[in-house]
Amino acid sequence: MASGHDSDTFLAQKKMSDEVKAGLAERPGSYTMLTGDRPTGRLHLGHYFGTIVERVKLQDAGVVPYIVVADYQVITDRDTTEHIADNVHNMVIDYLACGIDPERTVIFTHSAVPALNQLMLPFLSLVSEAELLRNPTVKDEQEASGHALTGLLLTYPVHQACDILFCKGNIVPVGKDQLPHIEQTRQIARRFNDRYAPVFPEPVGLLTESVLIPGLDGRKMSKSYGNAISLSATAEETAKLIKKSQTDSERMITFDPDNRPGVSALLTTAGLVTGREPEDIAAEIGNEGSGALKRYVTESVNEYLAPIRSRREELAAKPDYVREVLAAGNAKANEVAEATLAEVREAMGMVY
Ligand code: TRP
Image 1 (cartoon, helix red, strand yellow):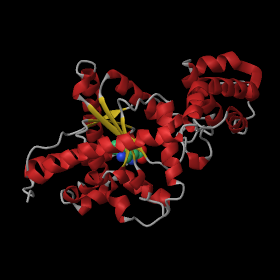
Image 2 (cartoon, helix red, strand yellow):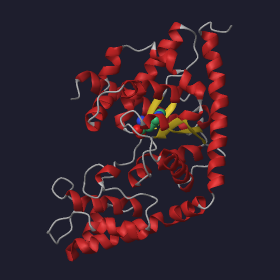
Image 3 (cartoon, rainbow, N blue to C red):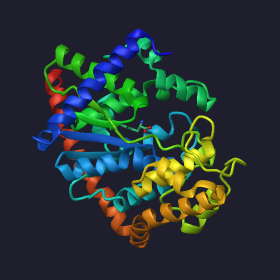
Image 4 (cartoon, rainbow, N blue to C red):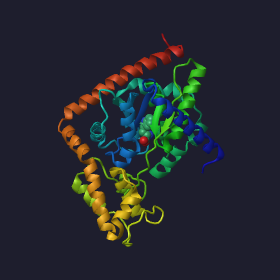
């Protein structure tokens, strides 16, 4: 339902994204990156190629990076926090195994940073009910959840503005579905600055270049569809998952995402992990059928993930170290959030 206005907004955001990318190499230290994930399960290849690789690149390029493990976002559309501590712990392990360096990147959770959460109060006063109800991503998520629209689901984009603005984040690497939230964040920053004093930057969403990796059945890769290859899965589990993925009876392997979603998803996956073109892989396998294709995908995925998985195992054997990383990230995030909240109180004349 892209109205003219929505596509104009998208083009404007795309343009800003391209401009920032062009400027990044020159002055990386003037950019603060904030992004994050909901700890609802293990990270999979979709997360990895969709955003983790980009985060590591930005970190290594010298931007100031923050990653939020968005634990309060878990309860936007579900009514339990079962497994949350385990999911948070494993998410930190996934990040570290993928090359996020805790010496440079601040990894923290919402629930450990009260001053971040307190920004929610002034920020909520800056948005109208109509603006909240208009957010297309919130609408989609509410429909998908089958739950009533909770107050937290309706307002979590504002909470996400708190995530981004507490550290004065000015770049947010995200997928397209998150752009409405970035737009809301920019509006909140602008309105706060206009009403009180210039405290916040207007962050830009960095559209990630990477392809949306399809799940093994050609749909979006998602744990809930059972089509996702987790970074933490074993080589055997990965082989089993690929083996039972749906292909078709056509022996000749071709890359044709519209008509052959299963075969093409396998080719896309193999292409990403080998750096080859899916068409070339298809031509090489040719008439050998989907059995041969699946063997190739299994081998190449397992080979690609082997070093990540072995780092994962090392980290899993050191739970105290992982907890220390998160505790240090939380301490740093608290320091930064308190400094920003002090500026906010000052700007609002609330220093008593
Ligand atoms: N909503 C994001 C997701 O579901 C996760 C997230 C939480 C986030 N806070 C953020 C992303 C701040 C970017 C910026 O993937």
